[in-house]
Image: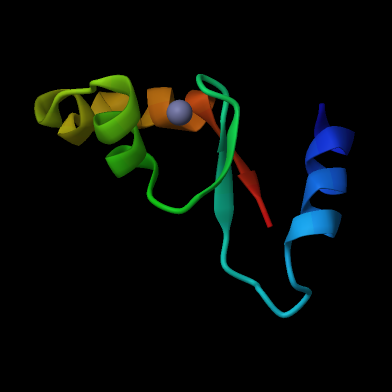
Length: 67
Ligand SMILES: [Zn+2]
């Protein structure tokens, strides 16, 4: 899994690009910059769900950091 992500980055990301992006386990999409916005827009998460502090764990589980 981890290897696949690294391979993908080698092909698609310029070396100079240093901004952290995320991989979403739910829709298997790469290059996500705003995790909570992504949950709202693509997975119908409500604003309340996202702003609850306890759900930061959920965000961490769903998204894998990749740089
Ligand atoms: Zn997603």
